[in-house]
Length: 446
Image (cartoon, rainbow, N blue to C red; front, top):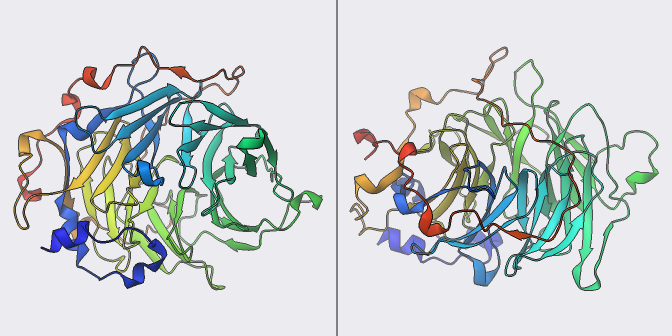
């Protein structure tokens, strides 16, 4: 009964989640699993497997089960996560370079991709039509995000510490940089993540200084002849002596709490409503040795999920950061992007350098019973992380275990043409069984 009450609870009005009944959801986390039919290989336009870099669930009401995935070869693929027979809805070659991030237009059937070709592109996902190309960066785009509940304003972050806030008006066929939102440029470091707190406030983080900055977009930063001054700065809160940065940031549904994924193997939680600039909680246990590891929150803000360089995804209870996380095991390489379905608590997506995308689902068997999927058909399973392996935030002088970096891509490319259908990529029916990434789950995790 508990499981059914959770999956049937309302998923609208996220900002009023304090009215939702507080079930012991953490007891259900070990019920997440990935069946063989929910593991999908990511392909490039030539049919060669390529690592997926970003994934995101649609927020449009009629597309709430649709997951968009972008990969290193510039491909975008849409999955119907409720269809086993035809999971791939559409795919197209969006860029001729890697896509590092993507973001759905809030509530609409369109999305923006951010690429290593220095452009952001707006797409109609129903037709695959290119609706607009946004230029202005001088290096690869690493991050893209929309303003909350705003369909016409998004921001991008680039590899030379530049971030743009862009307004678009598709019906009038014009695009522009909004006044006061010109790029801030410093060749010393990259802007790894950009995020809107609200329509007037932008958050950005860098690759090497461990600093998060808050910008008031109502100011005209183009009037500054020197480096512009941020509204608020959140300095690196850890104890490592070497320079560190952030690979991901996510806000809760109220915009009050920021979760910043740091390359010191910690995720820092900042309260953005006061003057305090030190974190209120620290989540540890994962590994982060690249700038591809991202995090996300559950629809009710109660749980934090993250990728990890140790080939697993992790889930923490937000209200108890000292509680050991639950691990989603089964990937064979670094887990990068993760996405929690905003309308379905029981569904999580993960991307990995093993060239797969996985959909994790809560066991839908009867309460207290195992599902009928069977151990032989599982390629992923959940298991609590032993408390002895969950260390406290790293002390000074300790370096993380490094994983191989992603293969470099050329920065210079020609003009983009209209989207091409990936005619030579395998259809969903042609996908081979991913036996190379399958291992037998340990009995202790059953």
